[in-house]
Image (cartoon, rainbow, N blue to C red; front, side):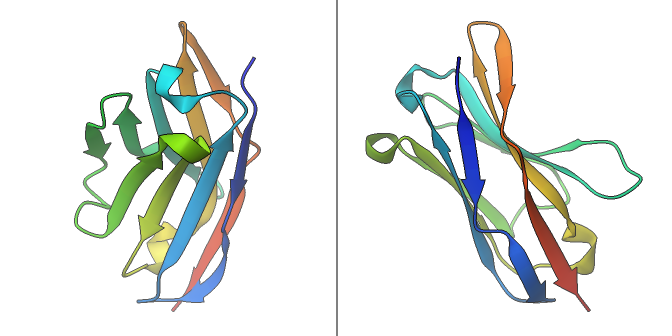
Amino acid sequence: QVQLVESGGGLVQAGESLRLSCTASVRIFSINVMGWYRQAPGNQRELVATITSTGSTNYADSVKGRFILSRDNAKNTVYLQMNSLKPDDTAVYYCAADLRSLRYWGKGTPVTVSS
């Protein structure tokens, strides 16, 4: 069982930045893939970015060049640095962890970007 706790969401204006954090209840070096997904009202949940246990990252085209995903194994935490935010980035952001063929989810943190 893995618990994930997200933080860092909020209300910002277009062009500003936010950093989301996701802290796991287990050592994250043991987790195959961690990532962030988001779900806007009326939309399906979509991939934002993932990072493997070896540090390889993958980003959705819509956030490439603006978002940076990193991990701190000592703190069991992954960070999503979101720059140049746009109103289209408004969503609830969920942290996910893939471990032993199971996917665990956090409860989500809301991000609202005003124009």
